[in-house]
Length: 487
Image 1 (tube, rainbow, N blue to C red):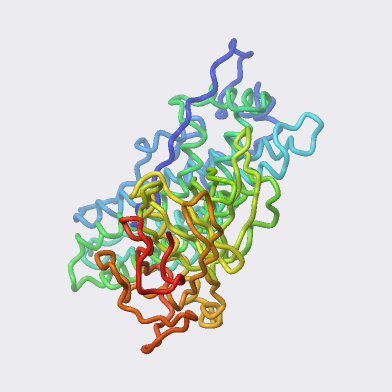
Image 2: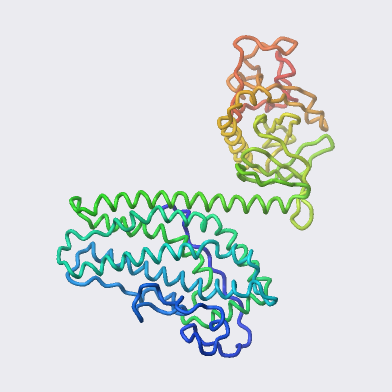
């Protein structure tokens, strides 16, 4: 099970106000509750195909330990695990019915009214395709219950089949991918409305009063996120208690593989959803940034670097994606004034020695401009250099025109900045790590005065390769051209 499928923090419930007029629990539908009488369809709160009293009502839907699905007759260790699978499935289905009956349907029924609590768009953002999930899991539960019910007519416990059910249903669980990809948006929408919508707060408070053991709405929201990993764990337990020669053994193995594939897709969907939300949030914070959200774009990291300019040094905020980098200056209210952006496919990274004036220096050599920056700490510098290098290398390798992009890499262009740097131009072909070492006073190169390269012709370095280019003693190296040294 991927550790990405984790439990979410459950926020404290809204503070209680003065008690509202008596609202009867959902088990009293049809008597005194306006919401229950008009908004909750009859029969929703009893699982389809179950006997009366076999499952608990919505207000008690969180008491999953109260639901039991016993297997009749003599039991093996396998049977106890099967019992647990079916029992947890029944509790899960009832929780989905609670989520829909207690919250979704009442909100939907008011969505087109003047006194709506949430818009239909917000309702869709919060609940996603939860009703489709309920339909699948109701059918799954029906088959599980019928299967173990059929066992009471036979004492042949050694040949009881069960894994074929989950093996057949596992592909249907791909519906969970949509729910998982929407989960980040669902949380953000819920908490936004809970904090800023008084009618929604009152609605949540009234539903809270209906429930006996006070299970929060977010705890119901995360149940579909946790369900597929729970299947995997339970099926692994079932496999462990199943003998190799049991006819169910290969079916359990196959079901686990299918479930793990679904979990992998769901994890990817969660990450993709989180990435989309992050990019949209960044776009809202940057003044002058439009259309940041692109199909294949992924946010990587962001942070502050000190940028050396012709007018001095200024803190600058850099935001790294998998294809571009954006930079700008922080303004009030967490806003960033965009200064520029550049494509990473034609960019390379150049490390620099510390000088007497500055430390943790490096350069981002873009196609049209060279950015000379320094980090606060050596660790921060190393993180930026290694991450930038990997992102650039991955981008080059993923594109069919990667080698052409390398050829377009620009030369380093440095202006004189308060006597720290003198004007210099360095091409990426001249930046060869193995030809310049930090402990040598003279590079092992033989450049001509015009800056041409001697044999052997160096290869263009990978973006993550780097060599210090400023001597530690601050003195200009002798015997080499200006193209090889700064200061």
